[in-house]
View 1 (cartoon, rainbow, N blue to C red):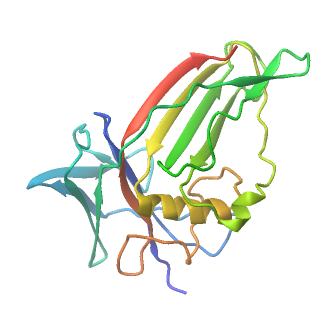
View 2: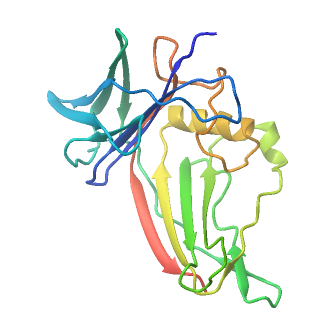
Amino acid sequence: GTARLVVEAILTNENKTQEVRLSLTYPDLNGAAPAVDGAEVYVEVEQVIYSFLPDPEQPGRYLSENPFAVVGGHDYTLHINWEGTEYTAVSRLSEVFPIPQPTFVAVGNTGRLRLGEFIPAFSPFEQAMYRIDIDWSQLDTAELTRARIYQYTFSSIDMSQLVLPPRELVEFPKGSTVVIRKFGLNDDFAEYLRAKAIETDWSGAFFYSVSDNLPTNIPHDGLGFFSTCAVLTDSLIAQ
């Protein structure tokens, strides 16, 4: 079939260079998604326009010309003009609740740790995505010295969620640096991520495959999602 535009855009309430990624659907599951170049990308809020420019280092990545932070209570509209079609999507900033106290579990007597179960998979009050970066490069000369883990809290349970497949349990030495970023999710974005998590088997892979039957807020047969998320960050040394 015809290749379709895939949009990955999470803007946050952090004052920073925001990014939008554009690619095309592709039939080869093991190949890389073709990047979309030459699109006009901007975000509009209350008559203010934030332009995005192509990143010369990374095709398909568009960076805001100036840093900005998403502010609550306003509709942000993403505009993408590409090959004669204008794609628009609207989002309003989510809210985010505090990060629970992180816990770690010792792995036998190895001096290594795993993440404890401090992130609830279900909550009637909030939906969230956690991105956890663990780095022990200063402690270890092994090949693999960092890991990134995604975990979610959703407010509705899917049958397939009741039997969670075994997570890949990352082990790391005591003294590793752990940075936790918690993204509050709007209901529509949470629905997208939940469908995606179920489809990718909770494998922790994020955004790397987009199938046709996931929810989307991108019009004209587009795929992917545009969302604005409030974010909290916590960093600590794993002990």
